[in-house]
Length: 113
Image (cartoon, rainbow, N blue to C red; front, top):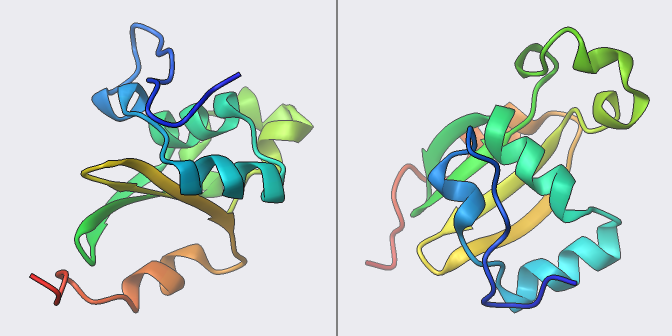
């Protein structure tokens, strides 16, 4: 069981993002939207990284998935998943049909600072 503040166990080839803690908000959203920690780690490893609104957004597109993984139905269904990483940790996860358009509409920088 992953709890808020505890790091996600990462593989050797994984990036620094998979070693960040999950926030309480993230754990709640994972439960509501039926995502596992392994799926989040997969998006963080393979997804396109975008910097918007004071955070790092990872978007899993079909072209980001290795060809061998596309045969796995569980991975192919993850196309369109977005994970937001803030300085406090991995903040939220959700799925949308047009993920790049959704992220590109956000402000380039956080206007609160």
